[in-house]
Image (tube, rainbow, N blue to C red):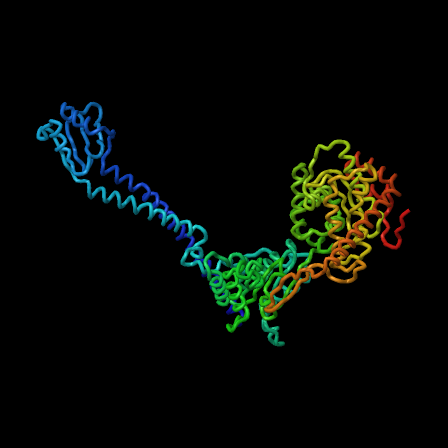
Length: 640
């Protein structure tokens, strides 16, 4: 009964908040419209006043001597003196003509000048009027109107950005977005490939829906859940699913939205966010990209530190686990950099649970593809198992993008269904980029073909490598060609023998170039970089060398107060020379092995190159017809 009363109370608060927001938006719109018209009026007021005060007509400027002469000759009907200026009125012809004279010297009058010029002032119709007040009015309006207009413009712009939270009076207000019950279409059924993470979050949602079940056994509400993992695996999507499933208010905010140029604003927004969440508890607060404010304190010292960020972080620490009770408010956060977070933030009592999301395995990729395939027409011949095997290393975002690219390609060719060919091309596009038809000379094309077949042949004949899926000399991205391998199953470990076989396959392209052409090309630059990176990791990180299981690279250290930094390698010059020698030895062995395989299988290589130059792309089935089926076990391999 109490839960129903609390639910109704939350609904009333949310409904009242939405109604107030609508009224505020309507009021802001009408106010902005009135202010815009007022601003336009302010811009034209000085000109209008000047026009009405000075009058209309055609205005010219003449020297004072010419004016005296024309008055003396009787050409002027009337003379009007306005302060320090004169206006001469000539008899009407077609229109009234006014001639504005140059300014008189201070301390002189036009009457004195006429007398000196031989003109009797009494014979001339002279009208004297003071312009002091009108000039003061015009000057005042001309000064005030632009300032007032600029102030109104800034006010409108600030209101336009996002309501009261963006004005100087509401800068410390939280910018969190509220998601009410029933407003989110994404549920847990919309998320796949992260089953363990879903179970953790389903438990959190159940905790909020049925708190009595857990309190009966003495369990307390988890205060925080930290979602970690690489980009694109579905951290934010899972949070949106929680918003769709939870029967409680859900406040979402990005870590960067707490930060502002003014010191203290971030901490103020944190306080406002938690106060709002407590009023509608039970509730959930979600902070996306929390590493923007949760980095380890004191890392930058006096030069690189940011007091505003540290104040914001301190306020979050206090709100999550301080003296003030914070029951029934769960904080969720997402980041792909958990290593840089402050230890005080991720300790138990603040973020009690750390949910790690990894790249999906083959079954997870199947489920993800099925979700994103809904609403798209696919050909019946599409093999989803093959698609799942083909997309090893793809994140959920990559898979969604792949299906979208496949649909675009099908529409481009005016097909009503997406075919397997579209999916293959879309997978390549996502991983390597679009095709580029480069104009190559026959010699360059042939060298590219031998280079790629060198990779493929060595990789195929060494069991530590994955089966070759495709070899092509069609350029993609910066590469003139590519060799793709396809794992039989997802791998989570690699042996020393497999790493050495990978280096040999990487060196296969350079070995084929030198054997056939007696030359070395610049196309092997990325291969050399990859091979060296693997060999160096084997020596300095993995202990796979005669130097033994010793870490020769930078070491991650923890010092006082939980600060984290990378301890540089403390090795002598002699030891560093031995490390370099072992790295070179691994590379040389891989190159020698690749060269041996290519020499022994030269005829097969020539046959593959001839076919590749003809068709530009060789698939796995055709490749294995020429070379033979790949040996699966490393012990079964033999080089003839």
